[in-house]
Image (cartoon, rainbow, N blue to C red):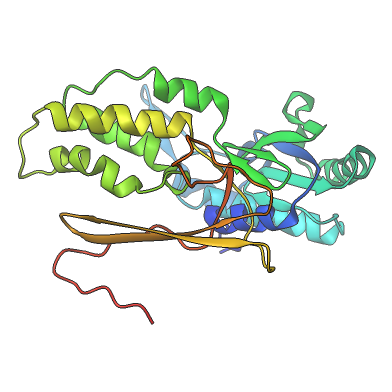
Length: 289
């Protein structure tokens, strides 16, 4: 089996650490269908439709190993072609640099390597060079990751859920951005409580408040940047207590940053998350060493 697809969170942290000024993204067109299946492998993908038997001769979408195989083949091609520094997640690739010219040259070389390896490139899927770009569903600018405006608008326009399935779907959407939200778990706790099998679905004032609050937090969510070091960098520890125990998160405030809310809101406009938000299970003791 090929090299595993890299962890999304690790990719985000690595791209943060570059603190780049310019970006470009490359997305191969129909990458799976650019990969031929060996003749001896094709029988295992046979299927019948309207009484006629068919089989795939290209790597099919939906097969559990297709992303891993595709990622590995593209990774091998880029390594053999000595591609410039980049990050890759299956068929999505991003390059960065300090100038538009530098990024443009890096992108052109990667495109050339992929074309020579037999992959197709759709020019409309090549974005940049730009100082702000979207990669892996996240908006990137100056080494900081932000929630894209179309996602913010989509969440802000959502209507209250009417059953458990809709509540779970809503939590899935907002949960992807939980690292941008201070005390996320405490805010959405009333919503999670309603999705448990043992509980009936009841939409009351507590759920309504949690639903509206988390939407507002998404609208005003801060950008996340890389962890910094230095005498002028301020570390801020936030703590809170809920029914299931204490919660805490450690953030950084870079020099010169101002608050995002009113005068009593200590959160900076750009925050660096030092540790992931963690909430211990009820009945367990929180130990800090």
